[in-house]
Amino acid sequence: IVRLLVFTLILTTAEAQNKILFVTSNQEYYGNTKISASNHFEEIVVPYHILTKAGYQVDFISPKGGAIPVGYLNTSDSLQKKYLYDGWFMDKLEHTMKPGDIMADQYSAIFYSGGGSAMYGVAEDTTIQSIARKIYNRNGVVSTICHGTAGISNLKDGNGKSLYAGKKITGYPDKLENKEMEYYKAFPFSMDKAIKNNEGNFVYSDKGRDGFFVVDGRFVTGQDPSSASKVANEIIAVLKTSLGARVQPTAKSDVEQVTEILMDYIEGTANGQPERLRKAFHPNFNLYTVAKDTLWTRSGEQYIGNIKPGEKSNRIGRILSIDIEKDAAVARAEIEIPGWRTFTDYFLILK
Image (spheres, rainbow, N blue to C red):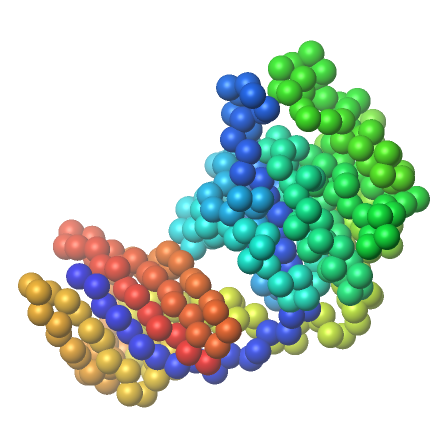
């Protein structure tokens, strides 16, 4: 059974400066070996969580677009577990955008996540380089973590000069790699040397796993996963300084508002809160259900009228996906009624 619910939202237009672009890799193996490579899950979810909570919208790209391999998961970590079972978030990693789909002037920062996959496909992608250069030239932030620093190895300005000449940059150093292992031998280049060859001052902590990070101008880089939260918070701090009040989120982002309105529907129905449903839906909305090859139309007011205040049900709902395009969005949610059936709901959401 599929239901289409139509309602209108009043969403504050998010300024372009409140968007941050995450760069990931499609590489599934270390070079030509059969050793699996992946994007570091923690290095994605920790910055994502902090930045979105601060009001920024995060988009994902990879050189080829589409699904990316993820690894280094710790399901005992509550934050990682939360996002691993978040269908909407994982859908974003399954459908990363291609660099050619991106308009750089919509973003205030670019962040290169790590993991072994990051050593492949990103550094040589000229479109990603162009996006990073444009963001930086508009007073934006360029940020990396761990092996993600490899992605800025060839980053130059419009005149072919290093964009970070003389600046301190960190990442996972060769010194801490196991050079006897096949994964390292398959690396296409040395990240340390590549940064130095591009006139950067590569620095690192000999200890490692101690939260080491560096901020030099509008470059924010972290050595390994232990610096993920610090890097994310520094991105926010540098943006506030470099772009001033324009990038300080004064209203919830489109994604946050759409999520909130969907939860009004999911929780409002499950917890017997008709006032939340009236807040979520357009006054004249209808529900459309296809059953036994017949389209059944029911008025929204009739639906809300069946929700008794304070009467809770055993419905379990979760957001599967949200796709926003300018002033409209399409969302999908799954509603499970234990012991009976599972529904998939589709929503048309308008500003």
